[in-house]
Length: 171
Image 1 (cartoon, rainbow, N blue to C red):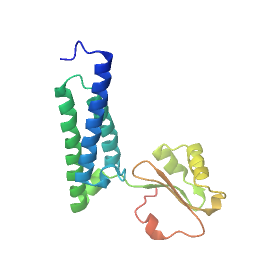
Image 2: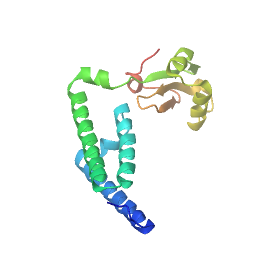
Image 3: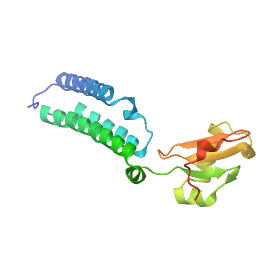
Image 4: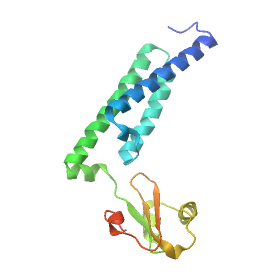
C-alpha cells in the first residue's frame, strides 16, 4: 500500500498516526479516569509501559490495519484495567492475588539486610535514595519502604504515625 512513498509521505504519515494515537489515548483516559496512568499498582505500571509500546506501534504502522489493531489493543488495555480495578475493589482475594505487598527495607535507622537480599535491593542504592530524600542522620529514618510499584519511600523525622505503615510487610 505504501511501497512508493517518499520520505515526506513517510514522515507525514508518522506524525499523523502519532497525533491520532495520542488523541485516542487522551480520549480513553478521559473515559476511564485519571487513575489510568497513576502507577499506584504494578498492574498500572505494566499498563503504562504497554501503552507506550502500542503508541509506538501505531505511529510506525505500515498500513491502516496495523494502526487500527494498535488502537483496538489500547482500548482493550483500558478495559482490562477498568475490570481489574473493579474486581480488586470488590474482592479481597483478587486484591491479594493482583497486588504485591510493600516491604520494609529499613526501620528505625537500621538496614534490614534480610529484606534487602529478598527484594534484591543493593544497600548502595538504598543509601542513594536516603540522600535523595535529604536524610542527614540515619537515626532520624523511621522507615524505608519498597512500594508495590517498585518506588522507594523514605519516612524520616521525629515520629511516625502507624497508619502510614500498617500494611507494610517485614521480612
